[in-house]
Image (tube, rainbow, N blue to C red):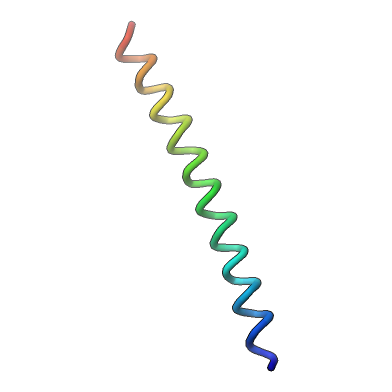
Length: 38
């Protein structure tokens, strides 16, 4: 019973990390596009 909340916590943490990674990747690709357009 003790392991279940830990797994949920780890999943939500993983989700948050993925969101941050996608956000940063989106910003980087946006900047890359602007640099190419110059």
